[in-house]
Length: 274
Image (cartoon, rainbow, N blue to C red):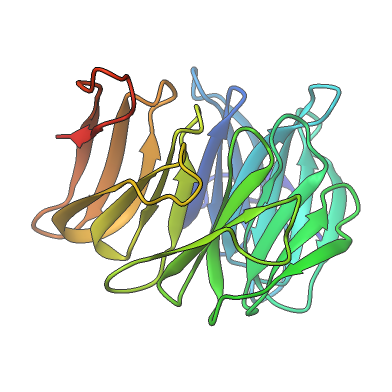
C-alpha cells in the first residue's frame, strides 16, 4: 500500500540513491520514499512511500522513456521488487517481484525492451522490461551484484559485483561474458558507459576508478585514477568531456573533476587529467 504524499510532507528523507533524466530529479529513501522534483526549478512534483515492507530501502532508480516518449521511473527496492512509475501521473503501472532483494536494474536504451536486473543472487538476469519475465540468466559472478549499465548502442551492457569484477555482456550471445574487468580492493558498486559509448568507468569502494576504452573488443586500453578516500559515486558529463567523482571522507570530502585529454593526433581517447 502506497502512502499518500500529504502524509509525508515535512518528513526528513534519508536519501539512498538518486537519478536524473528527462527533466526530472528522483531520489529514493531508506524507508521506501520516492521524491520527484522538476530539475531546473526544484518544484516538488511527487512524494510517496512506495512500500510498507520493513525491508523498504530504495536501492536504485532509473529514468527511461517508453516507445511513445513518456518518461517513467524504475524503482529497485530491498523488498525484492521492481516498480515502474509513470510520469507525470505518478501511478504505478507495473510491479515485478523477485525472490531476492533487487540492488539495481536498468532498461535497454533507445526504447529497447530488455532490462538488466542484479541483486542478492549470483546470477544477473536479462529480463523483458515490459513483463519482468526472465529471459536469460547471466552466470559467472561469484557474489552478489550491485551495478549495471547499458552501452548507448543497446547491444552491450556491464554488471558490477562484490567479487571485485565487472563483466561485460552482449545481448546477442548472453551465455558468457565478453570480458572480465578486475579491481584491486573490493566490490564494483558503481559503473557506467559514457553517453558516446567510447568509455566504461567503474569504481571500487575507495581509492580507485578504472576507465576502459570500449572501441577495442578486449577492453585492454585503460586508465586508472588513484586517490585517497571513499567513493560516494561518479558521473560522466553529458558531453563526455569530463568525469566527476564524489569523495566521502570527513577530512578529504570533495568533488573531483577530470577533463578528457584528446591530444592524440588520431583523435582516439587518450585519458583523463585532473
